[in-house]
Length: 290
Image (cartoon, rainbow, N blue to C red; front, side):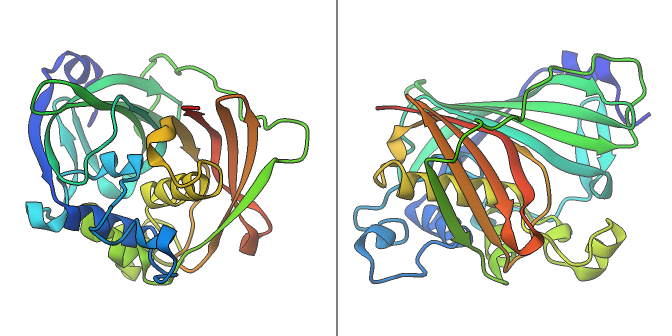
């Protein structure tokens, strides 16, 4: 079987050094659609090195861009796990920020398989990463849930249940984010060269009508929308951001994000209006700093 749970959980963490520059940050932001209104000073702050701000979700691609030598992978391979890319989907993401991410810098990133859940027809691999700066100070921690179709049924724990219920009232804000038809092609230059996001034939083999936008691109788009629309453009106010990826989005479609605020907790629901409100991100919450 491609997944050996015992071997995956007992393997030592892999460690890499991630280095990035302002150019990497700007390219990442462009991949989220930043800079469309290039004369807007607030928007320019995401794409111009003078006073450059860094979205916390940049942590998900730091040190992985094409300048770092990224190549298209054939599958997901790590100790105890060897799964074809056509079988996997990014199911969920949690990111916790311990300090602001600098516009250029270096971090040591440790990765390990923290859990493997049995969902019957699929396995969920929880890949945990933690990053520290050159002084050993924590920068961020993330937990990625990767769905491996056809790899479940091994009798393992199904994992925790998390409610997707939104508050029973009108949202405090609704944020609208347009995407461009070439957005996946730009976003992939930040490191995720999975052909699912560029190759029409590969996308059809995976069951999609055309290449889809990266789940982490939608994650970043929503984070930017909340920072711009709720947090006064200050990305350092984001403490954590957790989501489930509920549906695919084709480049050129719109993400509409409903926001409910309860103190320092934001509950979010992102949908696609072009497809009658089909969910894109659910089980979504953001903890913020006042």
